[in-house]
Length: 150
Image 1: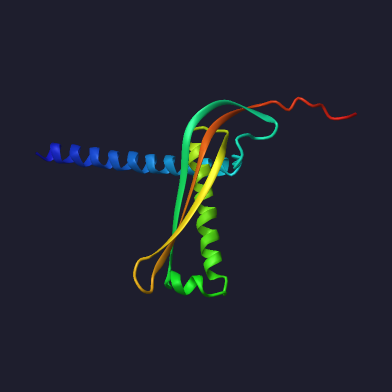
Image 2: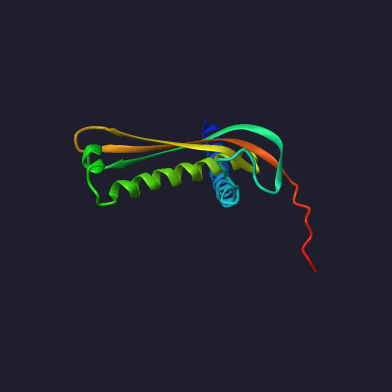
C-alpha cells in the first residue's frame, strides 16, 4: 500500500502542477485577449469605414452591473454627479467586455452596437446600475486602396 500511496501522491502533485500551468496559460491568453480587444473597433453603424464585411460571426454581448450605496431615487434627484459616474463606469465596462468577447471569437470588429441601461433598488439604501452592450461580430476585409500622394 505504501507504493500505491506514493504513486497517488505523485499523480496528485503532477495534476496540481499541470493545473497551475493551465491556469497560468489561461491567464496569459486572457491578458493577450485584453490587449487585442482594445484594438477591435465598435460602431453603432452597420459598417466600418475603409473596410468591407467579409463574414458575420454572430451576436456578442457585454454586461456590467455596479452596486451603489444609495437608493436610486436619492441618486436620480441629486446633482452631485455620482450617478453619472457610476452609470458611465457600467457602460464603459460593458463595452470593454463586448470587445473582449468579440476577440474571443476572433472577430475583427463589432457593428450595430446598442447599449441599454437600467437601474434597480436592491433595498432602501442599495441599488445597482446595469449596462448591456449588444452588437454583431464580423470579419473585415480592407477596401482602402488609396495610395498616399508623393
